[in-house]
Image (cartoon, rainbow, N blue to C red; front, side, top):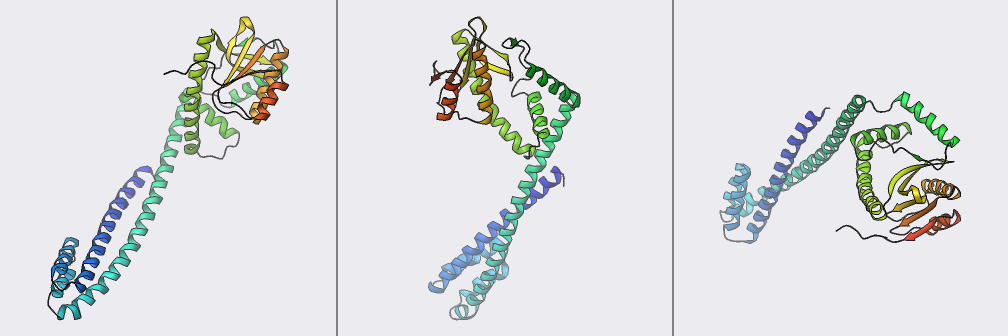
Length: 305
């Protein structure tokens, strides 16, 4: 089912649900008025019940409410008959509301999946149009990784990567790589996570920029015996390589590899420092100490207002 068809069905089902819910509330209000009419000797409750029946288009119910106003006859015949009708009507409407609620929920889910599929198709189309890495680029990437392991000119600055995080090209490139790694998330779920990561990245990137401005540094990439290492705060003339962490840090597999690279840089004569604005786990701090990496805890410059 395409997105247009799902949208139409969802609109119809939502309208039907609203009507059924309204009918149910009126039916229950009418039943309440009828129940009050049994106790209330005056015809007031019966008049209310008749009005509610007319509002629902239930003219037979209105007739029974009118008959209920007649002393004795209404109590013996009309009111019991209307009570039976109300019980059946309420039960039927409750089932209808439940069924329509499930239909609306299912259609909303189907619409979300269709929108995600449509968005993914558009992104794939753009991916082809932009000429981002495919099979030939994968081979080139593997070749570059092997060359990095050979570690020619270790410790020398390299050119920064071309793709900018947060851009469409970067997102499509990362989605393609995620699929190649056998990622199990659908595009919609993966895209939401990517967007969240990019929001965090933008905050971190701004903090990195603030540190670079404050320290008169730049960003860059250094070669290590274990492949390239991106440096957040780089001062080539002082051989200073600062790494900024704006959130709590733990010793993940990724961080173990990063610390291994930083440790290699210290052996090449670089002054490597980790700035941990919100601290880190004990294993992470111990790994830094073992690698000979200096640590600064907490923000080292003011936050932007």
